[in-house]
Length: 359
Image (cartoon, rainbow, N blue to C red; front, side, top):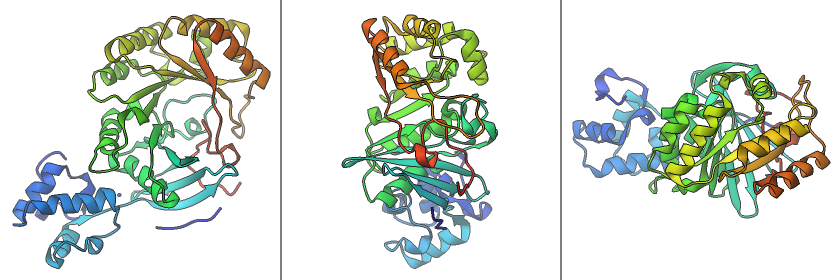
């Protein structure tokens, strides 16, 4: 491992917002600012290109802007990019980054290469308040939710490091995206915009523990973003023990919400299921999972539980995973086993810790 140091919707007046990060400004606010500075309208697109596409660190790098404008922007605003605190490379080519923001909070994100394609797993919160029993992130608790631009930064950071265009993004890192709904949605739209990275909506996937009210809200969004549900058990008692953060939304309510989602969108959701030996891999658990998913449009993505230091849980056997797949497929349920990437650097599902470690 090595380290490298390398971020509101109301009207903003530059005189009263010294060192506000310019990336907090909307398109309309930047337009208003340029009008106030008596600059031509095309400056807005130039500034946005420098911020969101070229990802510059300071205003001096915005070389097609007049020096006087660059000086004026620098006197009133910051850019506030994240800094890379640590970078680890897996034997399978994945790269995990620990990024720190200007307030000292940090998150981990992962770049996952596959042939000529690059996927990025991003975090939506610094830490997590859902307290899932098998997840490293939940042990540290929640520090704060991220802003949309901080989520976007993670994608750009991986893209720049790999020197490869990002083709898909999964919101499956630290935090519960639907506990930070507005900023998560804003980040999705930033990634989807043709003026920025132009990643197709169906290649942008949000994973939630099952925050039912937000599933209903997400179903009504106009874009075709993809939805994944961290299920991990279809037995209420087991799921409550594994995932206390969503205990107030029963499996029955979740099932109803997902049926409504499919009916409204016509899109296929994914259920993520980490197989834990002796906990959710029994015949009773398998029967409940089969009943929960059969007759639905859903795909079941089985995951061999990844090791988390200090955890009492162990992964199921490969034979057990194949038995789950065969049983579900026989019931007409599409089920596959995920190829877990980056586990040797604690970059796989459930392993992100938000802390620097030399281990």
